[in-house]
Length: 333
Image 1 (cartoon, rainbow, N blue to C red):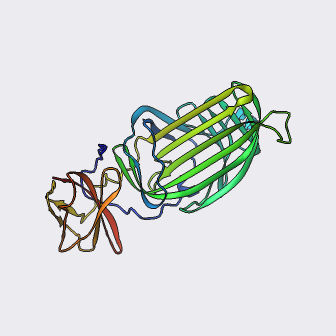
Image 2: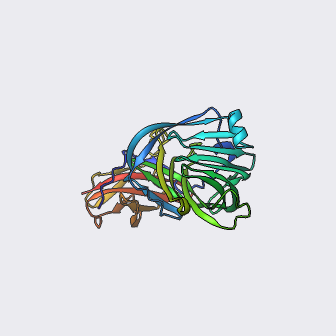
Image 3: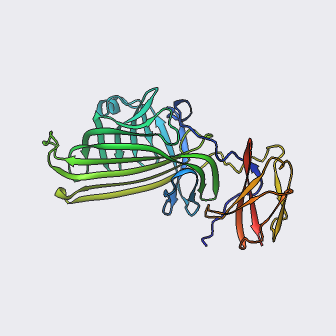
C-alpha cells in the first residue's frame, strides 16, 4: 500500500455530503485579490466521478510557491481582448482573460505556455452562475491563435460539467463538501486565409479540473493539461500543471466544535469506543489512506469492532440522521 500521511489529529464535525454550489457572489473573481498557491509535483488523479466520492491526490508533493493575481484589464488588454472585465495571472506566467456577467463567466483570451488564443470572434462559456453538481453546458468558440511556429484561426467547442462531489485528499490536507468542474476545450486550427474553416492544419485540446469547496472563493486545487499540434508547421507542444492554495480552510482544523466525538483506545486492536455526544450517530464507514471505503459498521452501544482491519492508518466517517458527519483518524494495531 502506498504511504499517504493525512494531518487528521483530532475528531471534527464535517458535513461531507452537503451540496456545494458555485455562485457569482461566492466564487467569481474579485479584482485586487491575490491567491497564495503552490505548484504540486506528481501526477494528479482526476478519475473519480459521481457524488460522495473521494478525490485522492494525497501523493502530490509541494513544489514552488507562487502568487496568483486578479486585476482589471489594461487599455491594451481591452484592445486585444474586447469585452474583458477581469485578468487572471496564475503565478506561472499564464494569463486568462474573462468577461464576467451576473449569469456567467466567458473566456475572452488566454496566454498559455507561449501560445496566445484570442476569442474575440466568439467567446468561450467557461462557467454559469450558479453551477451545482450534475450541471453541464456546451458552447462554441472561435478566434485567432499565435504560437512561436506560426499563427492562424481556430474554431471548436468547450464543454463544462460539474461531474463530481465529495472529499478531496490533497497532499497532507483533507477537504469536505468539494465540487469538481471538468472543462474540455477542443479546437481545430486553420490557416489565417481559410476563413470558411475548410482545411484543418492542427488541433488544440485542453482539459481543466477545478475543485471548489463552500469555504473558499477560489479553487482549492486546479489540474490542467493542454496539447497543441500543427503538423504542417512541424509544431507540437504539451503543457500541464497542478496548483493548490497554500492557505485554504482545512476541514480538519476546526477544533472548537462543541460536543465533538472522540474515539479510544487509539491505536486500537479490536473494539473501539466512542465518547462525547455520539447518540445520534448510527453508522461508521472506515476509509483507508487511499480514500476507499474498506468497512461499514453499525454503531452499537457506543462501540464498533474493528478486529477485521489490517494494521495501518484509517479514517472513520460517522453519520446519522439529521446529523453532520464527523471524521476521526485512527491507527489499527
